[in-house]
Image (cartoon, rainbow, N blue to C red; front, top):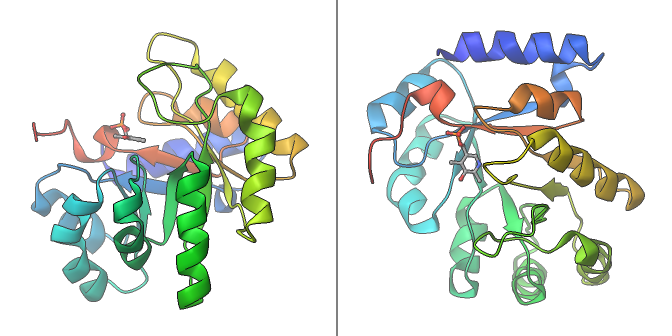
Length: 217
Ligand SMILES: *Cc1c(COP(=O)(O)O)cnc(C)c1O
């Protein structure tokens, strides 16, 4: 599927939900894609991209960020504390904050540099052992703790279990955000972004539907 086709589907989903497409940022997830596919999307004028690993992004993005001004890079994958500074240097948003230790480290570096990416807290809505994110019942307290560190929270993020109805998870994330006054919702991928838009997504993360299947890393 091409970028214009995805954009058309986003527009249609927004119209159906009585929302403006301007409220929905399409993050093109470029992890492990061949560079020529990413360059084609950059050349077409798209300016929001997502990556899963700090190190992989460090290898390819500095040159592209320089060549394609106004490009925003989102970190979607888990973040280790020894990579926080590198991540804050390169990324405009981090979607995977799920531990006080990482938030503390971000707060310390932000104090020092006066600069902070947009922060999304990841909620493990399916409470899956193998998945990152805070359990839903701990979300309110974690949001409070992060705010107490003087860090603004841009939004919440979730990755629903592969074998469950995604809408239930999107609705749960939206509910947690609403009761905490959090504006952003990073939810919806290639297979379910229209449902996510219907439930209030502000950031959808679409990889294979734009770039084709990921070539094995
Ligand atoms: C890979 C990935 C995506 C994109 O997945 P697709 O199914 O290819 O659209 C979105 N979010 C996260 C966190 C990912 O790791």
